Length: 126
Image (tube, rainbow, N blue to C red; front, side, top):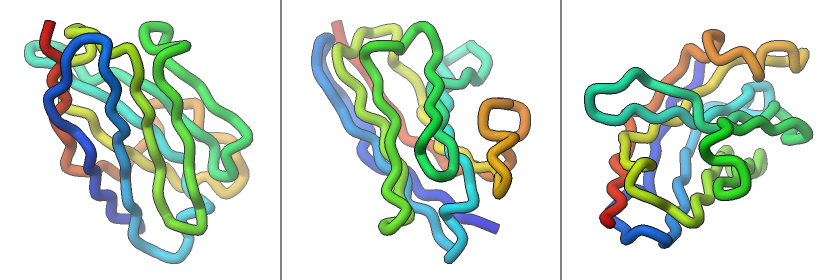
């Protein structure tokens, strides 16, 4: 199992940047694919980005391509989401998620993610 704790959220003006971090517990972090999801008020949770367990594969929602970058440091048991050129539509609670994926076959299937952090609020003012 893995426990996830997000940090780095906050209030930022449109056009600004934030970097979210997600620290994971456990000694097998490198066997987990990681993802970032978000949920805005009144909307369903949606995937933002995902990264395979070694980091060789990444995927992004169309709405964030070119603005957000997901990365991971397996030595630090941490995954990051660098968010640039933020706009008010990015306002949401951002969740870190994980799925055990030793063979690299599950990381791009959003429904497979079954470990979740508590979320961190990102608010972008216009």
